[in-house]
Amino acid sequence: MARHVVAAVGEIPPGGRKLVTIRGREIGVFNLDGAYYALINRCPHQGAALCTGAIVSRLEAPMPGEYRLAQPGSMLRCPWHCWEFDIRTGQSWCEPEDVKARSYAVTVEPGERLARGPFVAETVSVAVEEDYVVVTL
Amino acid sequence: MNVALQTPRIERPGEAYLGFVDCDVHPFYRTPADFDPFLSARWREHRQSIGGRSRQGLARTSLYPRMSPGNGMRGDAWPKTGGPPGSDLALMREQLLDLSDVRAGLLAPLVGGAAAERNVEFGAAMAVAVNEWQCAHFCDPEPRLKASVQITLEHEESALAEIEARAGDARFAQVNIPPRGIEPLGRHRYRKILAACAANGFPISLHLGGTSGHASTGGGWPSFYHEEHPSYVQSMQSLVTSLVCEGVFETVPDLKVVLVEGGFAWLPSLAWRLDKHWKRLKAEVPHLRRAPSEYIREHVWVSTQPMEEPERPDDMLRTIEWIGPDRILFSTDYPHWDQDDPRYAFKVRLPEDWARMIYRENAMALYRLD
Image (cartoon, rainbow over all chains, first blue to last red; front, side, top):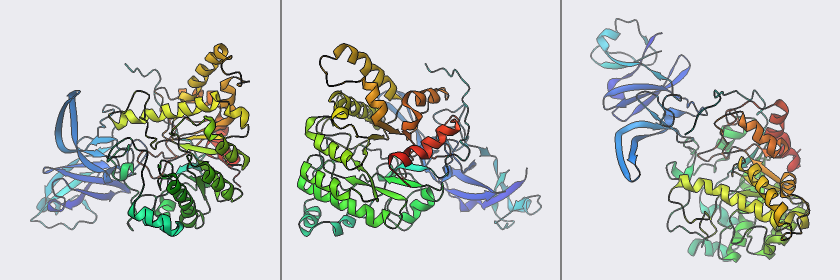
C-alpha cells in the first residue's frame, strides 16, 4: 500500500470530483462538503465508468406519498443503468450489503508533511504551505 | 419475500461474445433537418411548418425516463462533436462496433415519427426518408450496419410499395413494425403487409415502445416509468397472442417475427396458457391446426436486452431451453440507458454451442448475413 497525492485541496470544490489514475486504476475522488472520498471508476454491475455519472441526492420515502430528500449530493448515479452508489461508502442503493463499488481511504495532509514523504506524488507538485488530498492504495 | 436459494455467481462468457451480431442498435439524427434531403419539397415544408401529429396518449411529455438525459440515453454516449447519442458513427464504432468486434448491427431507427403519425401521407413520406437516411448516414459508410425498413402500417399502399422497393437490397435486413398499433397486429387489415414482408424475405421486427393512442396497459395509463416498463411485456404478449389466434401463421407460413427489447422469460408461460385453452376452445378457432406453442416455436425470435436476471441465475438456462436456444438473439440496445454489455449481460455461463448461437449464428441465419 502506498499513499498517493492526487490533488491540492482547492482543486476539487465541494460537490466536485477529479478522476485520477493510480497504479493503472482509474479512481474518482469526490468532495462532499469538505470531506473527501474515493471510488473505483468501474460499476460493479456491467463495468461502466461509474465516477463520470451524475451526483444526486438520496431520495427516501418512508411510505408511499411521503418523500424526503436526504443527504444532498451524496449519491453517484451510474451513466449506464442508473444504479446509485453512496459516494462515502461505495454501497449500492439497490443491494447495500452485497453490491458495492470499491472505495479507498482518503486523507488531507499538509504539504509540509508531504514534503517529508514517503508519498508518491505522481502528477501533483507539492508546496509546503498548502493542503493535499491523499489516496491510499 | 425474495429468498436466494442458490449462491449467485457471475461467470464470464469467455470470448464467445466476440464477433457477435447486435440485433438492436439505435441510430439517431443530429437534427430533424437531417431527413429533409430525403423529403419532397411538399413534405419538407410540412415537416418544418406543421410537423408531426402523433397518436400520443400523454400530453407534452414522453413515455421514456428522463433521469438519463435525452429521454433515456447512456450517459457516456454523447458525442464530443455535438449531437445526441447514436448520431455519431465514429463514436458508435468506438463504443460498440469496434470494441466487441461486432459482425453486424441491426438498426432500429425509432425516429421520424412515421410509425405513430396520424397524417398517414406524411407518415409514409417520413418512412421513406428515414430509410434513405439510414443508408446515407449509417449503412453506406459502415456496411456492418443493416437497415430496417420503416413503414406506416395505417397506409397499406405505401407500406407495400416501400417493402417491395427495398426487397433485394442487402442493406435492408428486416421490416420494422410498431408493437403498439391501432388494432392487434394479427387483424385482417394488416395481413397484406405481413404477407408482403414474408414474400420479400424480410423478417418483421417489433421493437418495444411507441404510442398507439391507447393506454399502454390493459388497466389504463401507468403513473411511473417503472410501471410502464412491464407494460412492454403486455404489448408483446398481445402481439404474439393476436398473431397466433388470428391464424396469421397459417395464412403467412413464411412469416418470421422478432420481438425486440420485450424480454423473453414470459414467452414459455404464455405458450403454456395458450395451449391449455386451445384444447378447450378449438371450436372457436378451428383455423389453428397446431398447438399455439408450435407456431410460436417456429415463427418467433426474441432479443436478449434488457437481459432477464433471475434470482437463481441457473433458471436462465431452463428458460432458454423452453424457448429454444436457436430462437434467441443477442442485442445491446446501444446507446440507450439500459443497454447491455455483451461481456457481462449473462449472469450464468452458457454452454458453448448456445453462446455461439445466441451471440451470432441465429442472427446470421435469420437475416441471411454473410
